Amino acid sequence: MRLLTHNMLSSNIKGVTDGFPLKIEAGKVVEKEVDMNTDFLKNIFTKIEWKPFVEAAKTLGYSELPEDVDPSLLDSQDFLTKFHHALLEIHLEEGALVCPETGRKFPVSKGIPNMLLHEDEV
Amino acid sequence: MWYMCVFFHRLLDYRKPEVEALAELFGAFAQDNNGEIHSLEWKLPKNFHPDNPFHFVNIPSEDIARNIAKRSILVKGMYEIWGEGTSYEQLEEAVNAYPDERKLPYLTSENTFKINIDSFGKTFSTQEQKELLQRLAFIPFKGRVDLRNPDHNFWFIEIDKYEANNGLPPIVEKRIFFGREIGAADRKLLPTYQLKSRVYIGPTAMDAEMAFLMANQGLAAPGKFVYDPFVGTGSILVAAAHFGAMTMGADIDIRVVRDGRGPDRNVWSNFKQYGLQEPISLLRADNNLPPWRAGLKEMFDAIICDPPYGVRAGGRKSGGRKLLKGVVGPYTVPDDKRAGHIPSTAAYSLVECVHDLLDLAARMLVMGGRLVYFYPVLREEDSPDPTFPEHPCFKLVAVSEQILSFRYSRVLLTMVKVESYTEKIADTAKAMHLDFKANHLKWLEEGNLHSAVFAPAPTSYKQGENGDSNFSKESKPKYRGKYV
Ligand SMILES: C[S@@+](CC[C@H](N)C(=O)[O-])C[C@H]1O[C@@H](n2cnc3c(N)ncnc32)[C@H](O)[C@@H]1O
Image (cartoon, rainbow over all chains, first blue to last red; front, top):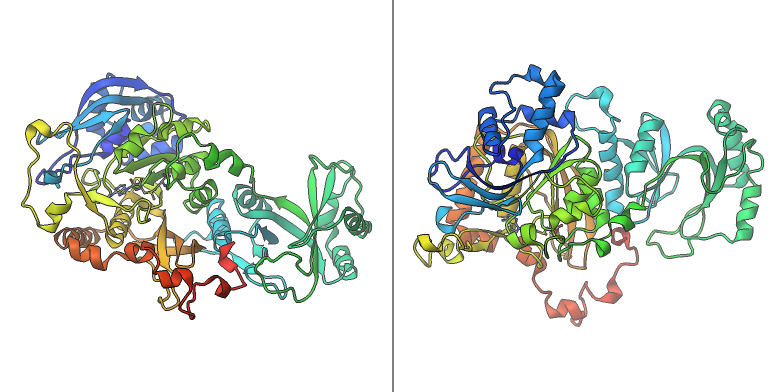
């Protein structure tokens, strides 16, 4: 699971009012190179919840991201490289995503978060 | 500029929509980009049937025409026609009258060339081909012939009586064309990506040709983000990734989406096999209860999928069957059983599945983004003309039918997001979602076109024994039309 995905997901258990951001329990973290596409990054930038993104990156051991951002940073190659790396190249292979309200764990195995709810959670 | 667009004689309903989609992708409508949905101008050669392979299309530039042809799957060739006629004399006259400045640059001594001969439903012997070529001696070719890798390909196309049965009405009058090739589909992609040699496939994997057509309808390209909520073995995303898109997929079935058939036989490995960028993300999730955070919207440029309404893979959704039927009271999974618990699921009706898909797309597509998906249609004699799902955020831009049997066909729908997802639309969708849940059984019964479409055929139909059956072999229409 990449951090882009983490930034999109939440715990949608019945009764939970704010299931975002999910806490990350990191087991195995791997890095995989991804071709950089500036247009893609610029589009996605506007959709990212930045604070949770920075926190999630730190949990996975990457702390090069600025705490505060504004769109002008998208002209900086240095920023784009870091953003790209954090967004797409760090991969949670094994671990869990934890609902911030209930503590329910959504396992991540073989890189794939299991977001399916139990029948009493829907 | 008008070009002749010659199609392969297959998937007839998919051919023009593919060219239209690629015209959009390559900027044919760029100059008047006012949010309107545009389409190209088409013409038929005189007396030609609309399902025949030969069409004329007006495309703003040769570069765009070339890009369209090269990226397409169903364009056999895009040609600049230098002349046409009903006889060789007429053809010669027409080519001679075609402006020199359009011809001479391609006929110089520095350029190698090749003349190809083509027809439809007919083949020429070597002797006939030689004779045909001699008829072109009036064209002042100065360059060298290169049969393997010519700078310019020319086509001499003669359409006369068909020898083979191609499902089209007979030719009214012989017609001959001569033109210069602008571009053609790269069909070599198809053997490369054929399912036969794919490492991981399942019973509902999308065949490569259709997957590419779907990716083209979705305008997959570098920098775009494509989502498949019913990803299965990933065959649709493989096609999107081939065209350079970033991809993401989800499926309710963990064995399919995560486990596959082992460490090197799973969805990821299908991308590795072709050297493609692997998906940004694969998820196990239920499209009935999408896991997106509140406020997330307009993430994807296209959503392309084959929803689960077939016999082979009917849809499931979260929530126990008995629970939804009201047979048992709300049930709590015991804490000690949670970790390994396999949530039970209930049948997912066609209407609900489509409702969820349209709601997802309305929310998660960017403006102008595309939803491309299959929809099943009954073909029985007395069934009314099919109507297709509608949504206030979308405009339906392409409908391509593929007949699968006497009883049903599937239709590839392409919808473009033209209005943004408002709170009001979201609330209506939410109310509908709850209604589906509260009246689960009613919706399963009334809303399940899928069972009507895919239930076993009544035996009288199958055997055609009640005399007037429309489905017996004998009454199969001669004109095959969309079967090809
Ligand atoms: C027709 S298949 C699509 C196959 C896919 N195109 C491929 O290449 O393998 C439908 C898929 O939807 C999945 N599915 C069924 N119900 C679902 C749901 N509620 N949410 C998400 N996926 C679901 C099935 O597990 C199946 O893999």
